[in-house]
Image (cartoon, rainbow, N blue to C red; front, top):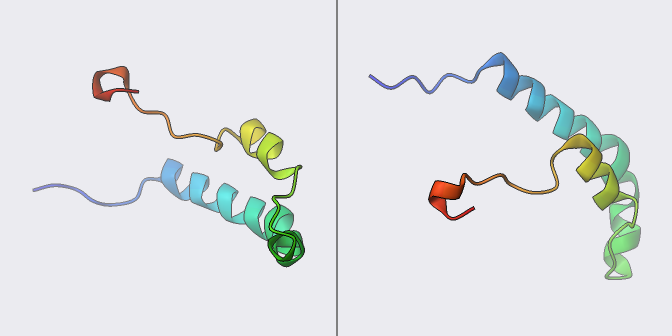
Length: 62
């Protein structure tokens, strides 16, 4: 039987992304959405946190 339990590492990653969104994205999202722009501070911060792109193994075309 497959185990679909969430690991501690996955929980920590979800917490980190949630904290980032709550502290750094949500406070300005309405303003930037209204201007149809993206907060320029978000992408570099996502890169720092390692959540900018999805890593796909080369064997799957990544």
